[in-house]
Amino acid sequence: MAYNLEEQEQIASLRAFWDKYGNFILTVVTVVLLAIAGWRGWGWYQSRQSVQAAALYEQVRTAVEAKDTARMKEASGTLFENFSGTVYGPMAALLVARTYHEAGDLKAAKAPLQWTIDKARDSEFQHLARVRLAGVLLDEKAYDEGLKLLPMESAGAFAGAYADRRGDLLQAQGKNDEARAAYKLALEKLDERSALRRLVQVKIDALGGVGS
Image 1: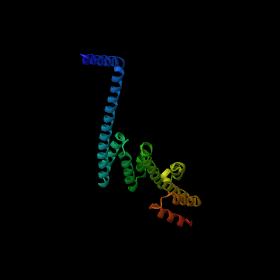
Image 2: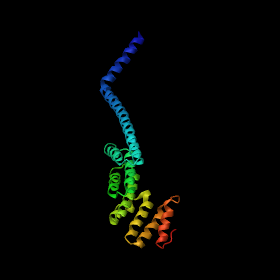
Image 3: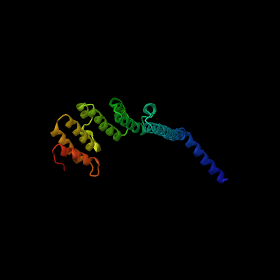
Image 4: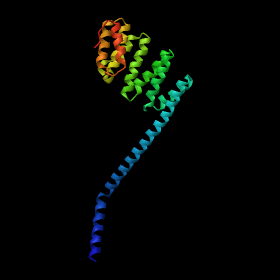
């Protein structure tokens, strides 16, 4: 009998507790469950996006190897439009730009590079696109426009590549002293293991300077 009374007291206490805090507990549990469901749903969505983007990138790569420009444009266009938030967007853009550049179509090469600068979420892709777009502008003799793409104050880990490309643009303008200074800065900023260092040294030697 004592056990039954104790049990009834516990039940009464639980009811009182639930009457006071039940709604709050249900709300918290609901929010937590919704958050978990949302997180899992977002993870599934991102995974699906990545798989579809990877398939399109493979189509772009295959089209480039086959020199199928029409298929390359179609696959890359879909990738840029629908999967710009994935890593495969800028990867495809850089590949497409290189393909156009090698074919001598400078105007077409610029568009995917500018897209990468504007849309890529990874700053490394943006920096690389800036260097390459500046190279296209060098070929077009748009030297000042190319220099504007390469501000040293925001170059970060790409400071060496920025300085090297700035040197190319300055040399093309006949500003040899400024070009030499840019190349020397490139040597200072480039990693000791960078394959670009040897080329930069050749450029300095051609200008009659001494590298470090």
